[in-house]
Amino acid sequence: MSVASVAGSEWLQRVALTEQAGEIEVPPGGEVSFLRFGDHSYEPARMTTLSGQAIELRGKKSQLVAPFQQLWAVTWRLPEELAGAKVGVESPRARDAFWDQVLGVRVEALGELPRYRLVETGDFGAALPEHVRAISFSPAEIRRQQQSLVDPVIPPGLAREMSWAELEAAAFPLDFQKVLLASFNDSSPGFAYQNGQWLTTWPSREAAGGGKEDHWFAPALLIGERLIRPAPLSARTSFLKTDDGRTLPCWEIEWRCGEIVVRQQLFSWRAGADAVARVHVRFELRGASDDVRLALGMGRRPNVHHWDDRTRERTPIPFFVLAPGYRRADAQVVDEWGHEVFSSAQRFELQPLGPVEMLATFEPDETGCVHIRLHKPTRRRRTQASGRRNFGGPSTSSAEVGCPG
Image (cartoon, rainbow, N blue to C red; front, side, top):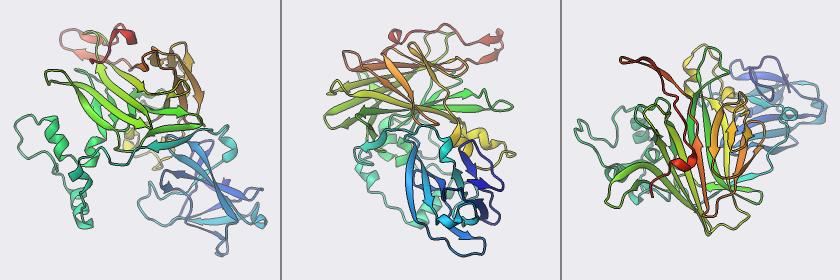
């Protein structure tokens, strides 16, 4: 695809629009491709000749680019006589300038595409309390809450600690989505989501002037050619409790795929006062046959604060195109600069999953478990007692620290 003015990467480009209209040049083969992100399409709403006549498509096809992020290349097949000609594209304003864009895909620059397909198991929302599933707000009430700065769950003037049971009983769906994984004075915590996915934030080595990037990890089961993960809000979640009823900061997630039960535990642990706090993740597979593998999709993307810099172009392209650049080094995954991303106590293989994702597949041990320890970048802080202090102390092996229970 050739366009008059674009911003993008080798394979993803933004079509320049003026008053929501622009031009592209049709390649010799008569096919042009656009990006689809989940349910949101960056295809044009309409394509015309330069004289304004609507162009009738000869067909469409979709190719999977990134299964975990649900990125697709949607190819339009145009009449053969338009090959090499310039045509007009239109994308009416429906949401805002950040989303209402036309993003073109150069399929020939994608390289080898993923052979695995991602499917979900379980029922959406099944983990929510019944009264939450029954919530039905009018459009007017939804708009009112969107504009409100009042927390819908926590009472005003609260002067006591609310128990998890109280929060859970009153929670709306989004309150189940994100859990902070942090140790005391943790400068770089992790975040876990209800489907088992988590991320850690690193200083970016590529962004001009510094900045941060997120390293994300998405667990699934690999069975044949299918990657299977729980449907949103379908997994059971809780914090770990001791026998005497105390709640510990260990986030537990449990979901099923047929007869297979997957249990996941995530927590942050600082092994010593001068050690770096690390996120530990433990998986346990029950009822899995020998050919089932625990899979971990992974990748990088700019941190959301990337767009705090108002001089940056308002386009989602940077969010989609950052290649992972990971490689395996014995029991570790390291980045392209040789820095550890995570280590595993179990054997695993690492392979590309299209241009912007990678996939690690693990062999559980004899108890069905996989243990992963996430590396987190060290930070230097100033303290009154010691001036500058380095918190990057000695590391510990995955076997040295275990989630209670």
